[in-house]
Length: 97
Image 1: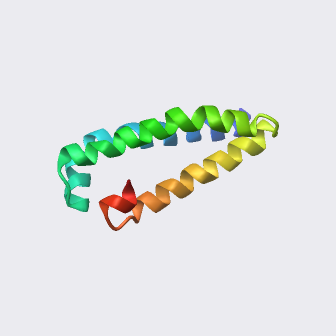
Image 2: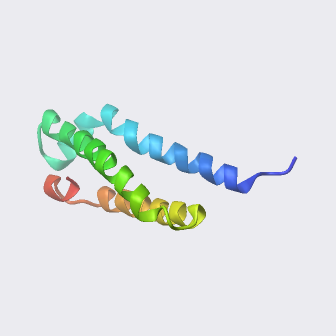
């Protein structure tokens, strides 16, 4: 059986995005304790992420529509990965938000 590497990369990317989007809901008490804020304040991180996706998706579609899809996806996944890395090392709530 031949492995379809582009499809595998797309599946791994979709898994990563889904995990990033849904896992913080179950981790709110841990996140709140880690950055020393209340659970509702930590919940604002989920809202901020959702607003960022809501605003960013149409803008990125407009800005990158003239680029090759493969290059645009690689660029956007690199930004997504960088954002996750920076979030994981954020020292406080303000930086994380």
